[in-house]
Image 1 (cartoon, helix red, strand yellow):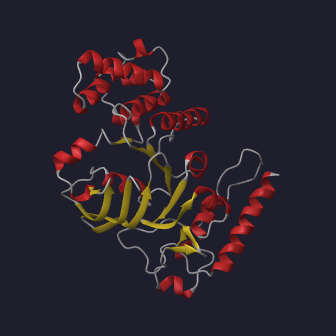
Image 2: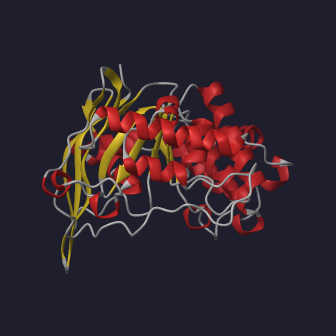
Image 3: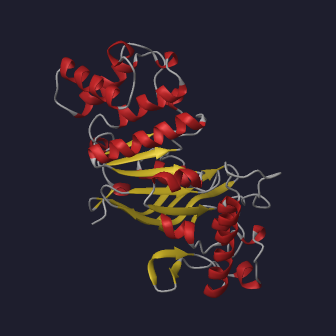
Length: 340
């Protein structure tokens, strides 16, 4: 049974210019102990999807519908008090920029112990001991001293480790990581991803990773959801998405991945820009940028359907299955040839 099951999630924002359809019919699920990656360009709706699940959008300007079932209960209709008990204890989130998420005027130890005391009946000394234990677990050197430092005294990678520690203070069942390696150098990125996998094995948490980087998804995810212009365009087990992607947008993302084992003059890029979510194009939202566009793509929105008889792999594209399978095979063969 899925820990979290999201069905037909829609998040629209009222603005002076009109209604922005930031998330438009998104569905996915995640099981205990598994990692799901949500990938797509900036503005595709990845972060808004997770902020909606966490109940962190402004209620004054947000229109939300659909379901986000957490252990069978709909988070979208849950009362504020019950939601507060779940958020931070059963579901925790690592935000994209730890410097803006940590309070600059409070020591990291105080912020960690407050998070523990909010959800647990413990003494201050017990909370401090738990905070030290977690700082040690996430690889902070000399935690007995660093616990009394302020956020600005930590490097970017160390601040991200503090944020992971804060998310784990109450052993959550689900950890949501929003671009956890953005703005970190390659070595630190690898350390953070390894740390998340190690802690997942230790605590048994499910992880939901939001990223624009398919390399991160390949490293840590069991399943992947590809989003474009507020919709899911492909989803399935990570090895199938990488071995036989069936949507031209996914092909573009894979084709634009930089490689360390080969030198090219310039990276392949997806032509054009994502559409405005105030007035998305009719039909397939990717059709203005798609090299395979047909007349039907401009008129009809493709359904998210199983690839052949494979119930675990879905794609939204009007191309016939044979063409998609052939083009996917060509893409992967080209990538393998580059690597050899």
